[in-house]
Length: 264
Image (cartoon, rainbow, N blue to C red):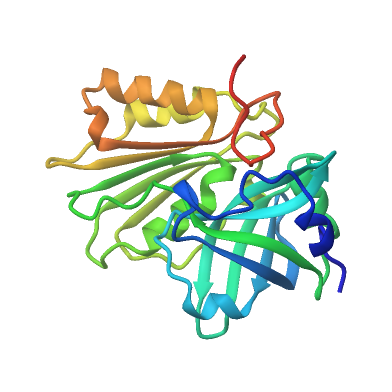
């Protein structure tokens, strides 16, 4: 049962998250075991993990789990992945992870086999569904698909929501089981570079903004998220009606704790 980082090694690391306090108060540290790992689409891997602690884990759709994927010197390297689904009865945690390159998280995911184990800390994240909103609008690249599907899947059956989703190619489109009022519009790059805001910005510029107080959710590359905020501001959408989360930065590896590296 190979471990991504053996427990004895992890105990000796200079780990800023050795104690679960502050922002980590209320989270749970678990030893997760790989139950399944297989391609979902050409650029997406579905990883299913299990642990006894999942039977009692509570989370809000949109939150994530932080996995200890590697060690760099004496420091842990973690990556954060949105929880696509949690089945407490079966103690199964499902993650849909983008396959995009050769980072430490993807290297572990690519090699993980049934029975392998990894440390996880969950739940994390502060972007949730605005339950009082009259309508919902989502814009995301492939890194945000799990969040979009988890959040839209949690909406009331009569909720109104639309999502504009950019993926590498048409074969990466998915057909999730969502409430009938959810509209998905797929934008395939088909060779265009990831991290270009043009397609999603154009979609948001043309999107219908229904009457009432809605809420917009933005997920993806850092500069794309910033550009989409500007589109919404120009359309008169108040900042308090926008929730945004940058999952990655073009041309940069994420920091050791899993968040996009800050500009220097």
